[in-house]
Image (cartoon, rainbow, N blue to C red):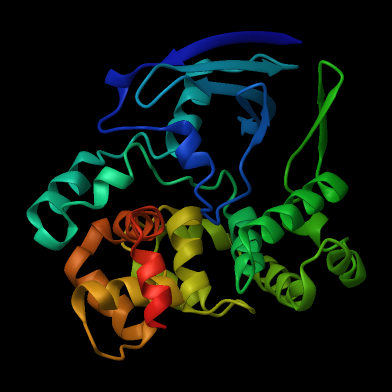
Length: 308
């Protein structure tokens, strides 16, 4: 087994980054990575080699310390590139900060989101299943269900006598029975997961095709999957396929956006989504993420609950 390390310094990306905040922000790409002694662990696939990555950060914008373990030689630059992709460090998020500063109603939003980045999926398929599982579900419940799927049906990788798991492929997932999925706590979503997986396998190069489509066309295609409504579709496109113009709308994003832009009006989720994409454009995904966290931490969500 080989092991080595490298760092990712603050000057290697544009904008802020807080690993802890991003990892535990409830984004539906995947559950948070395994945490042990203030370090996070995950198995990444690098050129078909399973690589256990250990990553830690002491504070906002401090050095990211990365250690990795693998049974075969692997290019550390590819590991760094994968980590930068997952935490969106290859995106100039200062553009979003500048946009927020230009909008008086959004001036305070970033103060509650310093260092928060998109937490994107290594595998789009895992994001699809995670997002389906998250619908009408608590973060605690859906993340446990996805962890159970990984630990019982994913590939086991051992490093230093510790077991780590990767999410099953589509073919491996179909070996899981409906009853097993229910035991993992997915409830009625079992048939959505199974049927959507079959639909993905029936289409050649499904993930590659979605990646290459425009947001609008990708949205139409993802909406064909079972158990996928507009909000789940936008989560999948944002976290699974890196389409920043997605604006996932649930009851809370509806209330928050309505409070800011449609006071005393009843506005549908579809209207909110269309409004946001027209107003925010390529910053829609980040603004949705920031608005939810802002409302939760600033007291706005409590205020909106009282108005319910």
